Image 1 (spheres, rainbow, N blue to C red):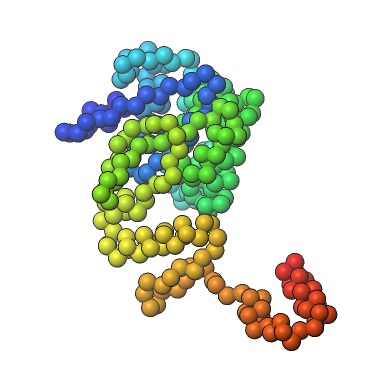
Image 2 (cartoon, rainbow, N blue to C red):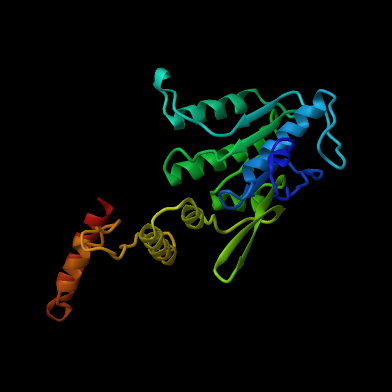
Amino acid sequence: HPVVETGLKGERFVPNDAIFEPGELVRIITGPNMSGKSTFLRQAALIVLMAQIGSFVPAASAHIGLVDRIFTRIGAQDEIHAGQSTFMVEMIEAANILNHASPRSLLILDEIGRGTSTYDGVSIAWAVVEYIHNHPGLRARTLFATHYHELTQLSDLLPGVRNYNVAVSEAGGQVVFLHKIVPGGADRSYGIHVAQLAGLPRPVIQRASEIMHQLELSSGKAVKITPGLSQQMALFPDTNPMLDELKELDINTLSPIEALNKLYEWQKKFIA
């Protein structure tokens, strides 16, 4: 990065290659916050721009074809005067990219879909990658940074998608961001670790770790979060009237026809 490298005082800048192999269209980049994903995206965009104007570029070597436009979707804030939320601004920018980019364009997309719920965000991000890859009028080279690890599955479904992540070293409970882009997808974002570095109170960090552990054990199912404080409420309800009725049911006193009627009654409730 021509600016970040110069601005580092007493720290070593970690260089990263950006080599698109033949047939590679979309590079999905996962990894922790503060690890260097956005810097890598900006670095690629700046080097391509510098090359297009005939400038020297900060690289040992570079082979860059013609690029008609560079589209970026990095960061967003609401537009109060226009009545647009952060997510709306994000979607307008994404729409502009998908409607105007060409196979000669370079697309830089940073965390598409983060401004809405998890399921909506993952679905939109997934669909955007599919559209870029499959649309015959698009198929542009794309760097796509995300915390949605579900998107790494796309490399098994789309031949032009590759997974990369920012390397992390874990030893003795310590996490070190190596700032090196390596092949493969990440399985964690280390958000709690970054929150700790930012100075969140220790009880908040401890409680967040407890909740994350319980959510991981749930494997995506609804789970009752164990209260850490007396006034703390569960995140998800654990009551079910049908289960309560089943617990109180004495099957030894039911006749076969009564049991069938009860099953029929439950089936109607469940389908309704």
